[in-house]
Image 1 (cartoon, rainbow, N blue to C red):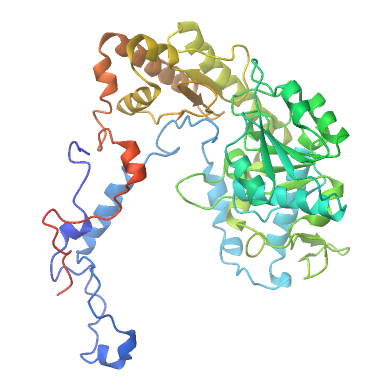
Image 2 (cartoon, helix red, strand yellow):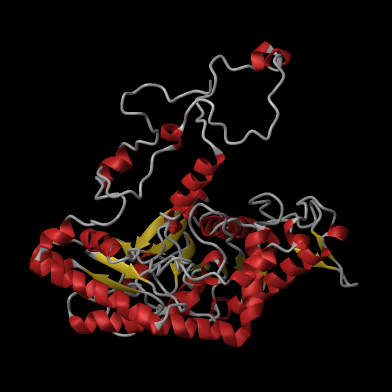
Length: 502
């Protein structure tokens, strides 16, 4: 690894020095402080912690934070992820003391405001999706998928339909679908795509049978396409006695335009941290509510929020819904994330949510059109896309040797976060680009210009692209070695132990 410029600063260990305490406001401990601890509770060797003054400590972390990229600093075109701008009014709502300071184990009587908000959010999501009931408990989209699959399993077991062991998953679905189906105990069956990007109906019919428990389909798919055969697919699934699961990660494309439950899906999850603006990525909390049709309600996780006849709210009591699959996480879910989604939905209303999808689809088609018209990148599925689209660098690679990975690295020099690359795996040298509804036309044009400029550089000076990035703090990494042999611990060059407090 090589680094450039002053952006990468010394570590705290390198800034450390004996006596440089972060602050002298705390009185020194008594001389016999350690003697008051049991011998078994004492460390044999002092912890290898750095000593730095407060100003150096604050500057260190602030400087590190300025190396981060996020939707508050620039365009974030990751496909399949919907990295949209998060309105700050949602953050304000989540910080209101009545919500933020509420203890998770507070009695129902003192949590009426939060319980009412959760009850309303369930109904908002049910209305948006066309489902009959929603659980807010899952903590992320993948856990929502697992929850949905456990509900499917419980449904078939309750009917003594124990031979249904297979889950059919198109190759254009999200990559977590096979994992969560497998975790729920199902065998996954891959269904290939047809030339137009939709599900291959003949392969689907051949795989479908009395052993099929469900199909898991991402709609719109990770190819950026709405499944045109959805009515026929759902009719075939239900005729076989199986259930239809929709991965809602791409819901941002169809708000107000398509209601999965109304179309015939039996269960789906929402990525509210994608569609409804709550923070996404960086290891922070998420939320993956799950909606179901009427026959699956008994199996939803417990507890759910109930509204009493008098208008008060309470949580379900233990054993109140005996067929429930039980808890998927503690309490009722990540309430702070759910509150942000509630605020987003209420701020937009039905017309506003429809406009969100209209603008997201328009932005994606505009970007796709610009790249397709130039011809520098291949667009494997011509015609209108949903909220995201695939551009392939396969032709560029054949002509110049420059790969999609090189294009992504060169985008960093142009001041952009790269889009998703090499996914979906069914498209050679894929770039999956999602601009979302929140970006200005000028931003979309500038991003398209940067991609086209890189294509010209690939023809004129390919080594400029293949050695990128040139302006980032960290240059090109050996990514395969980094993945197989991660070096996660800093050591000084002389291999001496880090300095210890004096």
